[in-house]
Amino acid sequence: MSIELKNVTYTYSQGTAYESHALKDINLVIPDGQFIGVIGHTGSGKSTLIQHFNALIQPTSGQILYNGEDVWAENYNRRALRSEVGLVFQYPEHQLFENTVLDDVCFGPMNQGLSREQAEEEAKKALAHVGVKEENFRKSPFELSGGQKKRVAIAGVLAMNPKILILDEPTAGLDPQGRDDILDQIAELHKVRGITIILVSHSMEDIAKYVERLIVMNHGEMGFDDTPKNVFSHYKELEKMGLAAPQITYIMHALSENGLNVDVTATTVEEAKRTILEALKKQKPSLLKKGGEGK
Image 1 (spheres, rainbow, N blue to C red):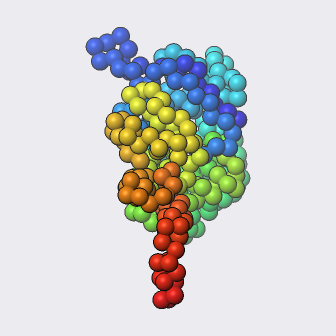
Image 2: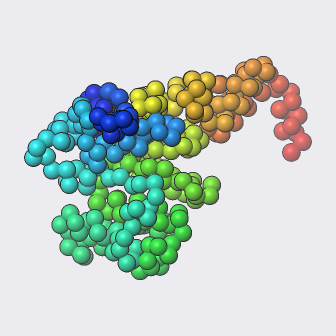
Image 3: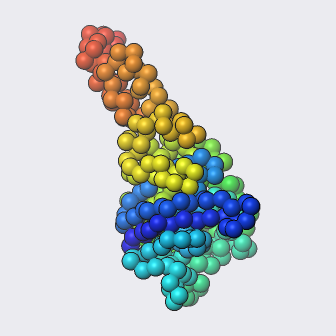
């Protein structure tokens, strides 16, 4: 189940004085099962890009293919596409509208043709996957906290059993614990269900921790498309794009410049800890030994 973009350009207000190119000649393949991150400064084109993936936006030129078929062909079933390529918007209130949490999550499966009973079964599984407790099923979604609303919005898409899940800033506005909880659950979904995840985020730490491939958007073009380690090694170029690498990247480079032989490609706390300890063992084995004896 792959998505392919061929020479995709999208122009706002074409033919007017306000004409601007949100996407410029994008060529991109998203194969099955990847966990992909998308980053970029405000106005870089990342939100426009992801809305092309499930045909919410029609390109000005170029093609969007899903499993080899042009999604803008005359008789293509775009409604079925949006069941398979689910999109969770940054602001969950844009996707919540029913009287209760359960009704809201049932809406998608029933729209696919499932009975109420079947839809409830899928809805309850999806809600459990994202950590919404049964005591909240009969509440209005608008009574919930911001984090819980996001979980319900994600469940509403998951209940339709998509092959691809696109998340636009799913952790925006959440405290660190809430952010980690949601991203851990998304990572678990990727592992258990094997679905493709496309995560748009402004948090470089989240990107470094979770994704295996990173796309950087810059003024409507792809600045980078590589592993996070390789992308963040170009941190000075990212800064010119109005972005930054994870804080760990800067710390590792500073340690290296000050003579500690660490792996400067480390991007997570766990990786940094490992390489710093290894470097210290080689450089100051006696100090580490003394430190251990005092415990």
